[in-house]
Length: 74
Image 1 (cartoon, rainbow, N blue to C red):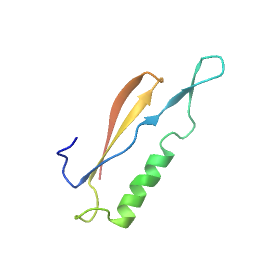
Image 2: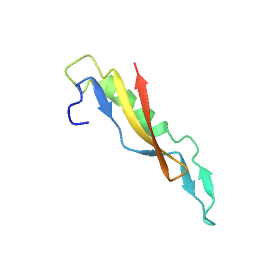
Image 3: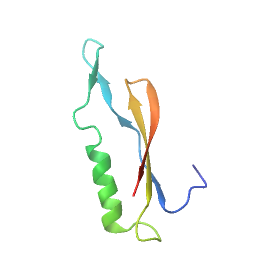
């Protein structure tokens, strides 16, 4: 999204699952913990021209082979 508004923040892809040693798919424990910390940092620091971002987008990697987009509105 190159033409995104200043009130929207984009995050890095978050894997919800990982491949185990035998190739099985294993869910991560608390996969969104880091993204939550990033959102809290944006809100605390006010890293844009407005009071804070209003919309956060983050791609989620599901089952190590499928991506969906998570949208979090303030």
